[in-house]
Length: 385
Image (cartoon, one colour):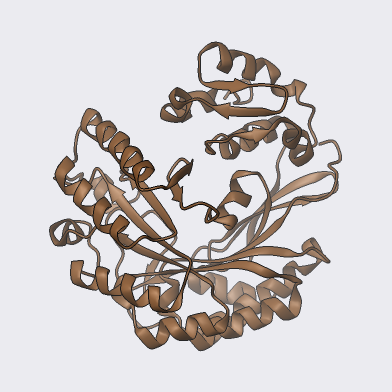
């Protein structure tokens, strides 16, 4: 890989792998906390993990932090405070960094939310999924519609930057039910909404025993209705599933989509780190027990690979073309170290097919390109894949 210039912005992802109950659609690295969460041991492992990673990120400022899971809100606020204290001690954290924590409405407590805010969390992401009690039950969620609404209200007492996760094309869901969910969410005026199409992922209960889902045409109509409804409410559709009030786009996720760097710590966490002449991808041990054991001895990374030059173009496009605004032409060479000429043929072909538009400054996916993103991305795959 040719040498890149200054390294891109650096984010920190912290994975908390436990949840109360595994949802039937979930393919994330999450594990039911049947015997409780070994909180003190896990915090110590995260700190050790961060210390071991320091040589790879030495001197670089962290622009955002994201606690994902699993269900990070299972942690005590004291544990979150201890983790963030270690982060600030070991890394230069930007003073106005976005610090997000994912929370499950079934674990919402007023005092806990207040204490998370005091610990330094300034953005809360609530996994609502639906306000319909029947759909919540079909999705295997541990909260009901009353708890969902209460969680949003509690969050708004302590946070002025909130994301609500919603899903559509749910089992047995009608258009009217989907719109009722969406309008309930809009009624709270959250700063950010993530609207995800339910997909059946391998290694999930839903994949093994598929529920009755809306057909492709109905799901496509729901997607169009989601976009229209949120646009009418003043939300910018800035990323495939991301909608935000003006100035409230998720900075952490934007760094992913613009091929920034991220250090991932915790069980199963992934990371992407740019060195002078290479892009390094890492994955920590997925099983919490294996992670705790290996982190304690200073070896939390299970897999590590250098991204070959032949894959960098595709990886960049896989992220950047999720954005409605696309990317500045100069960013491709800046983040990959590759000449733009290496993808010009694929860009020309995508433009001929009406999947992207471009000028001398910017490349943008068209509405057609966003609808058929996988097809658009296939044009950037290395030969033979």
